[in-house]
Image 1 (cartoon, rainbow, N blue to C red):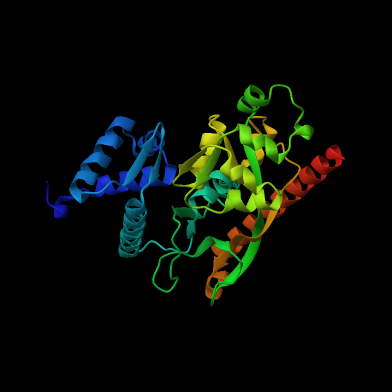
Image 2: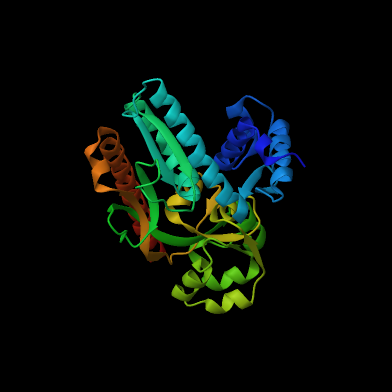
Length: 319
């Protein structure tokens, strides 16, 4: 085993990119190398560290618990290197916006919309970190975070983007394979007994919560289950036809509209918790943070209006 002091900085950048994208191919495209080269660099670093950074699963990869902690620290270190270099060369941080976002929120909601912000404000340079960890703003480099919770974050300014609204989803193909031509309006929670339920280690209570709300808790003991280490992986599994995942509607809305997924149940389970724009009060005095806040709040409001309209239409059709 090589000494850890010999860890290559480029390898750390490659690992960070792979963690951010959840995919070796996209990381390779960003770093101008092949997916195979990314895999080799990751394997070499894992051998040096003597623990697995990623869980491999087809084209997608996800961080192990050890990898989550390691990549979070690597990301912060890389950001400090960039900041130090810019400071040394006299470049201002005024237009560099550094945000920390929950991985599933980033991949399923923020990233598809972020090009709109970049087009509107091309002078603002985005530095986006994905992590389940929260950070102390006094010691971290971040200007803001997107956090999940009840909105009470001590000493910080928080604004609700949208609340969690749970609904089961599965691929249209799987639905028709199992239930043939049964009308969506005739499907009940009891029908979930015929499917595999897809669970997430990061959202452990979602199925129990939704089934309890729907009056069908018994389904949990009468059906097969598969467990994943993240919500994002359970959603990808649903898209692949492995079973039903219980998901936040905002994350899956585009797949439902495109008819890749079906959400057959009129029962939707609104949660008291949700996703919040969080920042220290002093950050709101800066132009970059204010512009991002106004933009992301407007996008979230649009999402909520679309979801409310769709839920109302579904309810009307079910009557």
